[in-house]
Image 1 (cartoon, protein in one colour):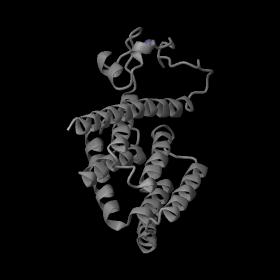
Image 2 (tube, rainbow, N blue to C red):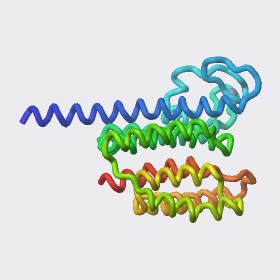
Image 3 (tube, rainbow, N blue to C red):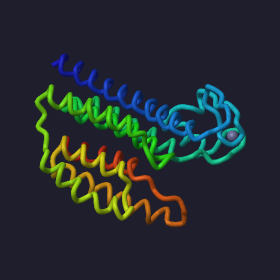
Length: 237
Ligand SMILES: [Zn+2]
């Protein structure tokens, strides 16, 4: 009886630990991606993009600090980019999912999500990603798929690429989105991918509706990342 209690406590601790580590990872990843957009020299530690003052550690706690500061810098009260907070939330959700074994059960899925996190962070600020990262990730995903005897869905992947080439040709979609969706279809097969794209499209429409006053286009990969977390959660429970 006491053993079951200890095991459940340990599992809760692991999920908490995964959530915290994931939030830190999301914060770090988005911060790195954002820094690549800056041309001037930057301090090593986190700083406010408006007044350039360094951020104290207690104002730099993932997820919480943004809420406690109500999304504003403590010194100059400039609005903090809410995308950082979003990145921290996504990281926390990913870390939690890893620890609930939703992702450990499929090493390929874990690696794919890891690759997607890099590409989404880049897409968020540059509307593009470095193709070398994509191909490195693709090779690693396929190697792990073969090593773990994970089935690959070649015909579905060909079909996805053949369909998606049209929106790319008419410039309604980026070539990067096509590459990524084709890879995902190859690994996970048509049905999970249809659920994923449907979720992402719904989310995309919702965000377009909520941010219609903004002129900037909406990067699709971060939306795909959030949709992936939703679908993985739905499939796992
Ligand atoms: Zn400031």
